[in-house]
Length: 458
Image 1 (tube, rainbow, N blue to C red):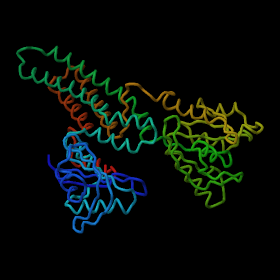
Image 2: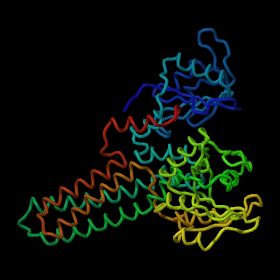
Image 3: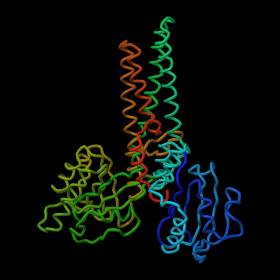
Image 4: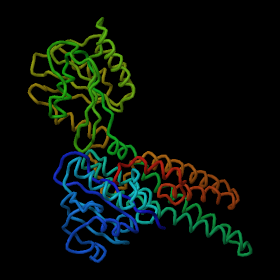
C-alpha cells in the first residue's frame, strides 16, 4: 500500500531543548535531503543512523536551524515506510520554521493520528494495539501505563486471535459436516461445538471480569468529596493532591464551585471533585454551587462523605447519607485532633457496612488508611494481576459483551438440539464481533473516527 509523504511536529509545543519533526512516506528521505546540508547525502546513508547538519531554505540556502537527522528505512519502522526525524531546537519559532521548509518540498501536513493509522493499514499493528498507543500517551498512573504497554505489545490481540482461531476451526468442522453428511458425524460435531463454545465463553468472561478495573485505570475514577460546610473537604483535596489547590478557611461556604483535580491513589487515578458544602443557604452564589454539587454527586463513581468528629450529627449529615444511598462511598470522620462529639455508633448505622476512616487532616493523619480503603473497595487491594489481560477501552468492552451474548445463544441452541447449520450463524457472528476489536472486520468510517482522536504527530 503506497501513500504520499506526510509530516508533523511530534513533540509538545512550547519551549524546550529539543523538538522533533517527523516525516513518513516513500519519498521522505529524498524530500528532507533537499533541505539538509551535512557531510553526507541522506539518500546514501545507512538505515537507523543519525546525522549532524543544517536545515536550509532550498531557495536562498539560508540556514534555518542546526539539527540532528535520523534516517529510518522501511520496513523496520513504526509506519513500515521510510521515516525521517529532524531533531531541531525546541521553541515555537524554530520548530515551525523547520516544518515549513519540509512542507515546501512537497510533503503534506499529517492529520491527527495519521502515523499510527499508517502503521495499522500497513499491517505493523492491529486496531487494538493502535488504540493502546493513545492510552499510553494519556496514562495518568504507572498502572494505567503498564496496561497500555501490554495492549501495544499485543496482549489483548493475541488473546482475541486465539479465540477467533478456535471459532474458525469449529466453523470449518461444521462446514465439513454439512458438505459430507454421509459420514454421520453429527454427534461428534455437536460435542465439539459445545466444548469450543464454552471455552470461548469462559475466556471472554475472564477478560470482562477485568473491565471495571481496567476502565478505571484508563479513564480515572470519578470521585466526589461531599459534606456540610467547614468539615474539611478542601483540606482533604489538598492532602490527596499534596498541594494547596483549594482555599481552606474556618468560614463556612468558602468553596463556591466544583474544583476538579486528578490524583494518583495507590496506582488508581481519581478524577477528584471538591464540592461546595451542601446546606440550605440564602447566598445566591453559594446556592448555585450547592446545586452543582448535588448534580456531580449523582454522576460520581465514588463518594467521599466527610463528617466532623468535633460536632454532633445533624439532619444535614443524615440527608447526605440518603443522597449516597446505594452508591460506592467511604465515610471520613475528620478533625480527630479535637474533642469528640459525634456519635460513631450512629455513623456506623448510617454507613450500612461501608468503610469508615477517621482522619485529622491538619495533623496529616489517616490519609494512608483512606487510600487503602479506596484501593480495597475497587481492587480488593491488588491491582496487579500477573498474566491477567486487562481490558479498559469502552469500545472493546462493548464488543466483548456482544460476543458473549452471541456465544451464549450458540450454547443454548446446541443444548436445545437446534440444527448445526443454524448454530453456525451465531458462531460466525461471534468470530466477526471479535474481529472488530483488532480491526479485521471494521468499517473505514470507524477507523477514521478512532484515529482522529490522536494528537497531531502521532
